[in-house]
Length: 248
Image 1 (cartoon, one colour):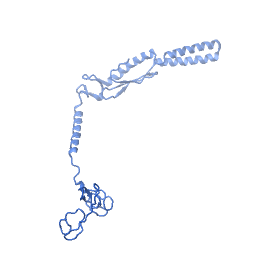
Image 2: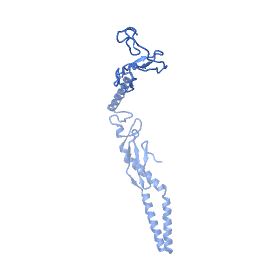
Image 3: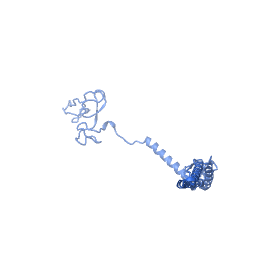
Image 4: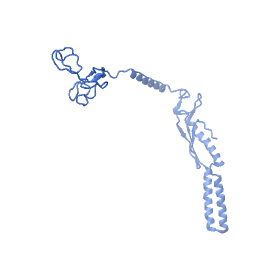
């Protein structure tokens, strides 16, 4: 069992050699060790090449010489199988390489005496002699706190801010007369028709001027607004005559 000085490490070893990566316990930055070739693997390769050569030589010589060559080849196959799938020799090399890798990479880390974490230089507060989780750098922490307070203030101000003022009942998007976009004024940008609203005489719902039937109850909207004093025809919903001022 391999025991790393950091809480997290990754093994990048293969049959051909050994390499390890150790990670900072705070930020996760990794540092890799130098690749170390496996002498066990190199011996295995030489044995397999020698066995193959002997088998070829035995096939050419035949007879007694061929038998000797085949025996050597079988012996090399046995040795190859012995080193296959992480042999004890390979395991010993792995442990030695792991110890050497830790000694190589350890100078890149600092051990926090407060939390016992091994951290990289980015997570080490040199002035306090602690990791930045136990003792954040003052300037960075103040800047972070200020920005968090600023975001809270902005959110609180946005909750109570009034971003629009107006009367909803006086706005419409489509002209009831021509059916085109009407704009934000009191009269349609296309045909000049008034864009105000009027109350349904039956249910009191607000409906656009020029609407013939109420969208809430279906009652007819258009009623005579003829002035009883001067006879002027006024817009439906008008409370006073536009000519003489008589109450309608």
